[in-house]
Image 1 (tube, one colour):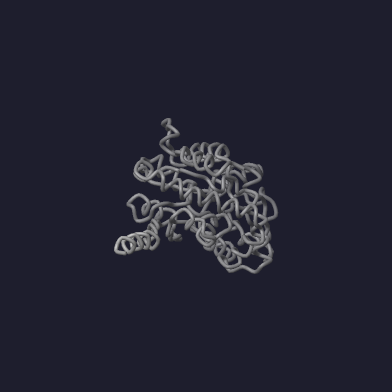
Image 2: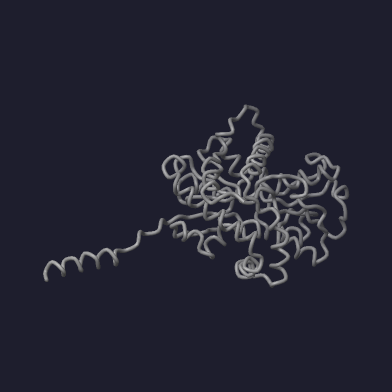
Length: 318
């Protein structure tokens, strides 16, 4: 009898043993817009939880996010652009480990009286920061439109998309670089969308950035975060209705605006590491020009995509 009781107790203990605690991580993003939805959606739809995380996704300005990543206040940031790449080129021990949106979902939006890119000659364009993705996108667009991107335009760093939209609507600038849904909102109010960046360049906007310390000490954690991001992107591409519903809740949009936003951004959600690699090399070249860096920089000082490729192998590339 005692023997049976002991066995029963042991079996009971096995089945009621607590599950392994989830790893707590903090991920930063620079704004609320369609191109930043990978990890907010991964959190909402449970993909981060599936990979064993209790995640907090925070909005932090680009420069502050880079500082927080460097000092360990956050675990990952999602903005690639000039901030992350510029930091790595300057010797800050951070690396890009994944791309989730390898082309900028941005448009050059002008006040109603400006209907062509050449008409902006001598005018001012609102961007996030000098050397950031919005700055690069503006330069690429105006070059394509026949202007000298440095001599013919002025650039004003005013901050995130809502601040750029405000600067445009208040007449502080003649044009602004905006993404969905603000570009569509501007068009409804009579502003002109002169061109879209994804029609001109492959230039990673959002992905995953980690510290060198994290890469060295916790590569498996990074891989699980990347896996959650890949799952989220596959959901975004394959489930329009579910993603539109998410956008209505996350960005507080009408169903129509959320649908328009989805249709604009979904085409650039690409999981091909080769596209990421190509785009990152362009970011490096452009950032070097911005910070006037002339030395040759090994690619390994900026990006490490080995974990991304491993995550794709495990999930099966599509």
